[in-house]
Length: 360
Ligand code: NAD
Image 1 (tube, helix red, strand yellow):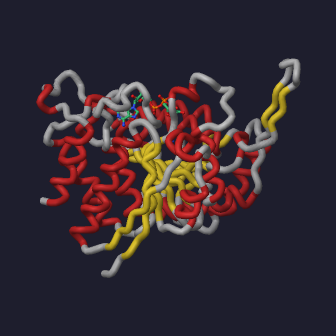
Image 2 (spheres, rainbow, N blue to C red; image 1 turned 30 degrees about the horizontal axis):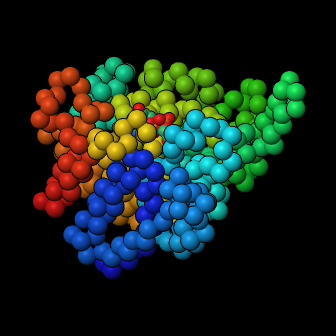
């Protein structure tokens, strides 16, 4: 099978520079083993891009991103901006712009718990075991992008929440398509008892559901969903929700997996896909060589599966991660007190373990 793909590699800031090379190395390893041609081009984004060019997303990076098959991203962010909200040019503007320019309207987060990490979660093991959820969060609409107002005297502020029918329809189809490849169960989360945008959301989901009669569809309110997620996460399969609700629910769900360092995500539209760990640039550990590279490696697996339709190769990567964990190796964020120091690895040693297994 002759497979040729162009991938833009954007490690970004902080631990992005440390973990993203391991996602790339895993893709290179798979390509070498299977005879695929993955061609990488480097791109700048975030604080490093501002320092080098004055822009958080230079035109050169954007052009490369528009012309490739998929993007492997690390993280953006620097303490300088977190401590000074008045700075006008900011790393996160790069991320928002690339999502908009590439039309990345759906954020996908698989929440899969590795059995070996059951004890790393703050939730009880018997509640968690077997949980496997695929979240679809709408990413380019809703209250984050509506009109904003603030009275000059600071006495009033407002953020407009709005959705168009087409915005709900397109993410609904992606979520239903995914449900068809899984347990054929979809849960749509809204607040239709209070919000007009949620009533539209629910109407559209119900319409699209008619195209997927095999999928069992349910609707639940966001407050209930937040509670059910920690009470009984196994009841969920595919979950689809709006931007604000998804932002909160997916971070809550990250606790199911024990650490942010284990979770991958994809932002997709109708063409190119953007793959990244869910975590940020983690200033507190940047430069120490201890960041967990597994979320970046699992992001590479997600790219193989969703953008390149190479599910078997994606599963090989996931199984290699599983095997390394089964052998007892951990990075510091997922090591509990029972793990001996000899098994607590730094970023590079952990990344290399996965690569060695893929090569074996
Ligand atoms: P963060 O996700 O960077 O870190 C949160 C906590 O998790 C930290 O204690 C960190 O050490 C730990 N952590 C995160 N990833 C880890 C990994 N791979 N291995 C081990 N531990 C890990 O969130 P934050 O501290 O709130 O933000 C830091 C910066 O990242 C900020 O500038 C923020 O704006 C930015 N940020 C960027 C993105 C992105 O690029 N998509 C997302 C979130 C935050």
